[in-house]
Image (cartoon, rainbow, N blue to C red; front, side):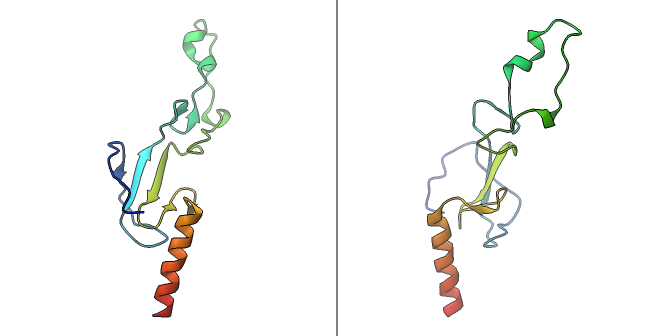
Length: 110
């Protein structure tokens, strides 16, 4: 995973280690989905500008649907070394999981 290009200006290093491999190549970026507003879907029909004064009742965060890309977190945090998704507690892909398992097996055999 570390050989992938690191050109995205929105990606920054997180101040934590990977809970799976212990590495410090953990990065984060805000969710880039157009409809995402800090993890929740920005529903324009509930915008206060569409209502007369006094008519608008603000929705609580729990009533808004979660963003389907970031699942309500508002950001993505993952390890570039092993491919572990820190928030979802799973590997980003089957390939990442297989590579991690192979490295773990090599260490056990030594």
